[in-house]
Length: 509
Image (cartoon, rainbow, N blue to C red; front, side):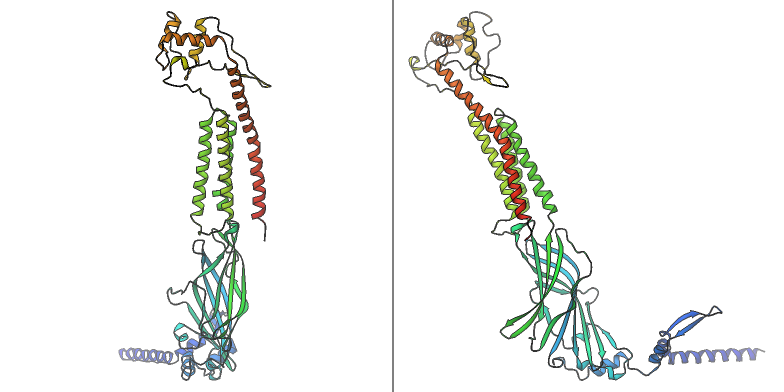
């Protein structure tokens, strides 16, 4: 009994080893066959293959694999020989992303996929009965093949992405009597931009990259765009400051000392987005200009407050202007933002000039007295003009009544000193004339004579005082008229400037 069990176990082990050896011997064929089947569920719930006769025929026949094909076609290949004597290269570009545009250095950066396609009869392998008619290869084999040695001739930098390996793709098609080579590079480029900042920040920027064969002229290599040309991988591409408007593809034939070369140029047209500049430059300057106009309503007596408004407005606008032009290239021509900021600063400066004019007209005139002269040569100080009362319809100048007695005359002269100050209790105790002795003049004369002269002058008002009053009043009226005209003239001129400015710089070329 034990002998039969041992014999059965040995037979099972032999059968398993034989089955494994069969699988090991035919594993490539079995794996090839399993790839040719789709599976379905039968009526018993089991899986059964759906047989495609074409796939089964191609898998079961004796075909050449990739290693055999590459070894055969590369054995007699010469990478220095131009295929067929002349090659036509078709180029296609797909833009993946546009990362930055620099106004300071006038360049832009972008990531692209660039495809090149050409025919090479020396790589034809259709006669070898290949298992597949396209070979997907890497950059190692590409270095052993002939290439048109094309490059971007005007790029500042050009790098092939190398994460996690060089992003280079090579495919060889077997197309009857010749093979088609298709290469794909993923590049990071930095190219130049043409910037005309005359209408900044309402300008357009054009950036371009030119692609050509570096070693072969048109007698050996002809280059042209494919049907797709230059395409975007995303429908809408925009940056923080720019928006991509259009992409143009251009093909030129340029003459060099060594012959003619085909140049393929892709041109990117960008439109600057002016929203940031409107919020940071234009709207604040509007507010600053309006604040400078407030000084016209403060009157001619608020000279310090008006001066503070005008100077602060001018300083704020100067700071805004410097903050904007700091991030721009130093060009020698005038930009639209320069015209705006300098014109607004001119309006603020003109308001300061108007303030200086009004201040000059409304200034207080003080009589000049000669110091160190004898009392006989010093003219007594006349009393200042009486206060002016103004009504809504007209300005009426009323003369102060004549003082009735000596004390009123002294009080009038004291009230009219430089500071308008009367000592507390002055004239209440004792004789007012005796108290006046303490207010003697600078000349070494008798105080009593000075007091008598001032009292005498207070009794009668000379004609010169009346004319002086009229001149001062005319100046105040003129200053008031200047402020009234400025309130309407400055906004009107600023509106005219805005109409001319926006119509000129927003006009489409």
